[in-house]
Amino acid sequence: MIFVFISNCTILNAQSALDQFNIENANNSTEKPIKVSLRKLYNNPEKYNGKVISVTGFMIIEFEGTAIYDTKNRNRKNKTNLKYWLMMSKKDIHKLEGECTHKYATVIGQFNRNIKGHFGMFNGCIMNIRNIELK
Image (tube, rainbow, N blue to C red; front, side):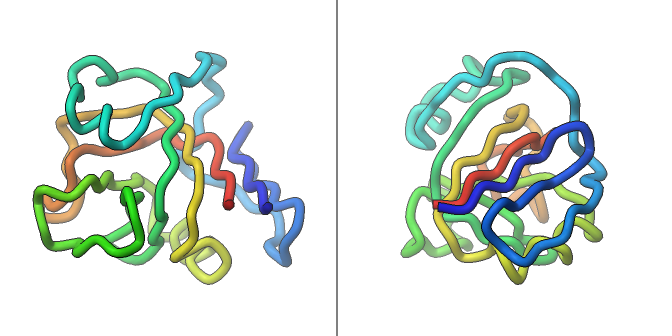
């Protein structure tokens, strides 16, 4: 299991070759995350809007398509899929994409139901990401 912590603007990856680097959108919130499934998030986005959440799914990190999905077999173009945009800077995407993409992960960050990502392709956004745990 690989842990990537985004805290105090630093990522630490305890079991990989990634060097420490700054995360541009990290926040220092001490709010306890609410563990929620992607299905529950999809069914009740207003309940979690603005809250710090913890979700688990299949993470893809790539330019204009950084997101977490319920399974790796989902078609990213299908609007009914359970898919949520992960808001990261281009710089952070490039730093993480080789080591962390196409893997199952738990992501902790603030949920925003109104931000739909690139061309509105996603069901919402997880921003101010503070922790990514690779499975």
